[in-house]
Image (cartoon, rainbow, N blue to C red):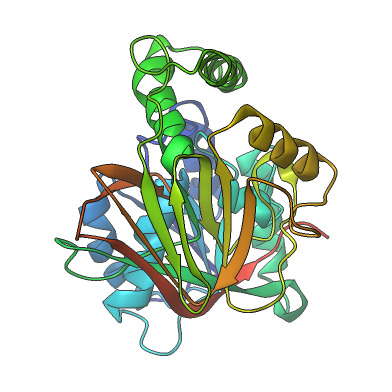
Amino acid sequence: MAKARIALLSNPKSTGNLLQLPRIRAFCAEHPDIFHYEVEKADQVGDALKTIALVRPKVLVINGGDGTVQAALTELVNGGHFADQRPPVAVLPNGKTNLIALDLGAQGDPVEALKRLLEMAEGDLTDRLVARELIALTSEGVTRPVIGMFLGGAGLADTMKYCREKIYPLGLPNGISHAITAVAVLIRQMLGLGGGLLPERPMPIEVKVRRQGALSGRFALLMVTTLERLLLNSDLHTAGKGPLKLLAVDHRSSSLLRGLFAGLGGRLGRKKLPGVHVEEADEISIEGDSSSVFLDGEMFTAGIGKPITLTRAAPLSFVRLAA
């Protein structure tokens, strides 16, 4: 196959693509130097990248939500389709949450972002490339490491599950869905309740950070990430002890408020706050009684004696759209 300037991997079932994909297809039809491949299931991504590798793209662009990005990253790292010449990755603004796209400066209209990427790929991309560390998740029943960039657990995972299963099916705009979820979480915190019309109350878990001990208890929020930009568009200040950044907030309203205001003020990790734990490590394990975590949209479950282990994966190059 001839070399393509851009290979575009799309998931038609991603929520954002329900409206945008016809425009993206039309744009690709007008630009033969874009090789467009569509998948509807995660298990199709391997075949997609095997085919995409034949056209030797200068940039691999992923058009879908965080789950689509995670499936593509997992296949890029584990599949061996590009040998040691894996193309840099760009992510179009799409999907429900798109934390990865936000971190790379991809916001606004996905067709405009694709147009800009096409123009950028005409020249030298060196100044636009950034290396990103990746998370490798392993646990019982996972046959090969799952690769991602953002993991949510404890109360955050319960909130994500609640939003996905009970709010998104209402068909409301994303902003309204997230606002309703936030109110439900606030009511849960204030009343100390959980379940029914509210997100579940977090289960006790143990989080072990290599060389730094363990955290145990109920956490309103638990996240592990390699992203520079977190929820609420805030940064997490760490001491450089490892690539995996961990933020855990105790399941107490006072701790949650401290963490919220520190995040809004850009002060997370700058100093110790009661009930707010900020760590950085190269290995983290999570163990609990049927405790769920989400890695870039895909759910995994930790059990007693069956921990989820997070380690560092080899970094990949990404294309930053923001100046």
